[in-house]
Image (tube, rainbow, N blue to C red; front, side, top):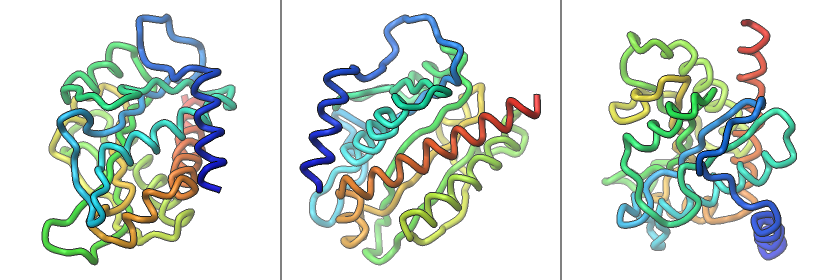
Amino acid sequence: MKTRLFTIAALLLIVLGTTVWEGESRSKKFLVVLDAGHGGWDSGAKGYYGTLEKNINLSIARWVWILSQMDPEIEIVLTRDDDRYIELRDRTGLANKLNADLYVSIHSNAHPRSNFTNGVEVLVADSPDHPMYGQNVTLAKLLQKRISQKIGANDRGIHQQMLYIRWAQMPAVLIESGFVSNPLEELKLRNPSYQLAIAQTTLDTIRDFLEKNRRAN
């Protein structure tokens, strides 16, 4: 099963080509900038079995992009499609430059003192005064509930994040898809089928959120 999923992904990436911003004009679709956290020299968290967070993040982001190729409503632009480091401000800066409808950053979590902590978290900008705070929380709650239910993970709720997503000028969230510091969850996160389930739920939730916003406006 894993081999089949990887083969499908590889063929799609070769035939379609991953969408990374290179100066193209944006389409009339919803435009979502999807960030695979960390990369390059910044590997992020390291799992019990040696899994690097940056690789999990990129795999899930690529799955979302692949699935989006069959979605007439959404265009996904990746901040990175390979193993390279991008400055934090440049990640949200890309979304701001493109006037994206949404910014989503994909991460994997870790606990420095426990191998038992597990589950999904979604983070939003740290201040209720942020102009997008209400929309951020709405999207975060949807993602948190749906991803947790889809993969059968512990629902750890939504939290505030002090770093760069607050620089986004559109609704923005950061998904912590699981704990690589937990050996059992680390193995799940390495499984392409598990990654695909997270990716599909993420894409479906993004679409529902954006369509609801469009109807409201």
